[in-house]
Image (cartoon, rainbow, N blue to C red; front, side, top):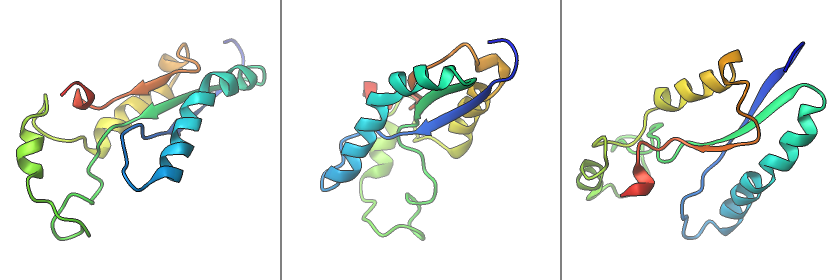
Length: 120
């Protein structure tokens, strides 16, 4: 895209979330409209993509900051391809690339960046 352009990104979550029907519905809708909204925004120089970061520990998986039981999670994490859940920097690297001129060719995509979580 020549001339001026600007990136924008949706952050999403596509995992099963028992007890969170409204939240899961809104996230599914966000993924579903990404291509349509991207087509509209391209006309005004905005590049849109959606990132599904998978499980990322932003503090909710530390015993001192969580409100949930963490029993058995370390064993589950050990079975993941990288032996851990994501970190904020894992997602930030992708977002930084998508927001740069290098990522401008990607438009209207829902990108899952979960370190293989969905493959296990």
